[in-house]
Length: 188
Image: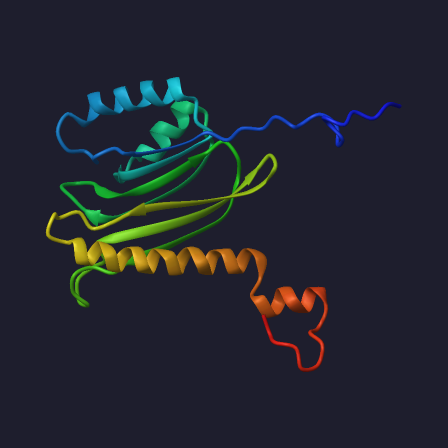
């Protein structure tokens, strides 16, 4: 057996993950023609994971199912909680690989008593080389709501941090898994 200094650990494993995110604009306007165009473009992109913002659901069907079926993405996490005229607006994650965990959190709106004007969804996807952490986000939209969006981004950062700590454990859990700190040493 010979040693190759340019590939000391052997051949590289070639793995890709193609993720697309798209605000599909619900069922406003000529949504049926728009859906055909979205599906055609997504087919050309050949994604492994698709995040849809303003995806719609009705009692009989959902945009996540239509897109997922058309693209061969069998695993879906969809939600709709903003009532419109006979449909709900929300979001979705469609995936080629199983979605192991899913979680949603509202992001703060303009007033405490109003429904949340934004949402973040977390999907932990069992990809071919390990877990893929996906966060699909919708923020408040009015031009004058910059302060609200800034507040939502702060909450988003907290949510991502919480999800990351659950994945790898808290600093105490990580430290304990390795070894306890020496007496008098600072806690990291």
